[in-house]
Length: 282
Ligand SMILES: Nc1ncnc2c1ncn2[C@@H]1O[C@H](COP(=O)(O)OP(=O)(O)OP(=O)(O)O)[C@@H](O)[C@H]1O
Ligand SMILES: CC(C)(CO)[C@@H](O)C(=O)[O-]
Ligand code: BAL
Image (cartoon, rainbow, N blue to C red; front, side, top):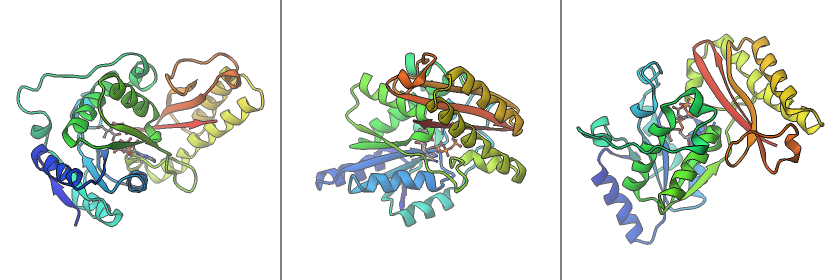
């Protein structure tokens, strides 16, 4: 079985022993409820380094009080089994008290890339993510850390924090793993009813259509409006954003995205009680 450690001291013992033997180490941070998207990050890490460490920690600091921290899917035995099958060397599963001991008072906050989109919809989110990811990187001392492009803004935020704080780690982005119909795999897909799951494919479809329209010379504001209308027609009750943005700093684009160096379409929308996010490059 993939070994499970719960303290920073045990985690460092393993990682330092591997490094002393000349092996390189990858950290793959997760919140558990693992699916093939997470396992694709482990497989990517295994092509780059000899040792992989997955962390599972449902981080309370990135959930606002009204969000789904309590309902978030959990299942350590299943997660450990999947990690074993994937050949992951170590599972770091700290308690809340190990991560945030009594009196914990430090938050990593950033501006710029963290502010629009997810930052606007979830004001507490990136401070919580930046704080826990910075801690995990300091705790595990990995050579590389792998994050999914599915959470594209999160990946850009983590790249920014790592650069700003001179953290000695290479951040690797991994492509989005999708279900056969195109829906991005996500732990929160488990919240969808069968009917909602069938409707959810409208999200990647609307995004593909918007990108095709812009590629064909359409205006980006018109493609964004058409995408939002398609989601409403498919039963999405609210669209938080459906925006073409600069792929690096997520700033707004001019009217013709094709003139921009690197456009990316990012979207978040609600199907019933479930909030789905996705993004696509050109
Ligand atoms: N479909 C996917 N393809 C690639 N990476 C993914 C995918 N889903 C999640 N990841 C990545 O796995 C890591 C852990 O994510 P997390 O545990 O939050 O899973 P999640 O499925 O994104 O859950 P949630 O439903 O909370 O968004 C992150 O780096 C995330 O980007
Ligand atoms: C990066 C992360 C593990 C931090 O809690 C989380 O935001 C996630 O699962 O994407
Ligand atoms: N997958 C990013 C973590 C979150 O949405 O809370």
